[in-house]
Image (cartoon, rainbow, N blue to C red; front, side, top):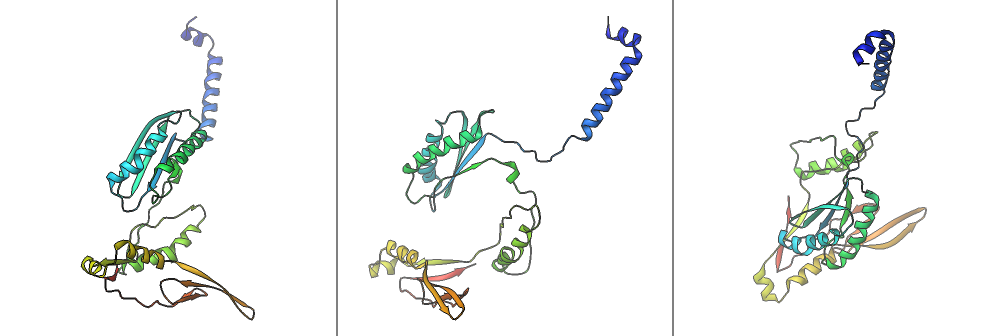
Length: 259
């Protein structure tokens, strides 16, 4: 018996089945959840490594290649893509669909631990991340002012950032742009050579001076204060207040503040 003949001879049954299908479909559609960013676990991992002041060629040879060779042997790897730039290396590992990403993460972490010994000592430890679309920013805000760019960034970081992070539903806020204060040391090679001062000695002295040493606790009555001493000046830090350190002038170079 054909479908048309069956429908003609049993109109009540066909009508009831059609109505039941429409009602069930309408109820299902009304209760179907809608998410603009559904929770999808992509089988992709990324390994980021930073090596300060290294050229892209050095990053490729010293960082990216050893990590690629170590991660290519992980079971289930489908593709390995790398990107080497100045001071930064990124290796992205794509697995086949259906692979347990948690187990794959443990395998990648074990391989990374073996490859760390082949990396330069000055390189940072590789950072392993999962590809999570939910971690992408969903709102970008811009701030503009006639203030100094350094002052504007300081206001955003210290006065605005924590207020936005306290809004319900906000996980984190990243600040980009603006300028940050830094000290730029310009060396004079001819004077360094005439004084017999090697460049490594200057670098080590700057590194050794850029630290803060704990100085213990000072008790006065019912008040207890934590003190620290800066190694690059005679200033003392007490109760969150710091005196301005006196500048030290060296004949081998000059120091200026960049904005």
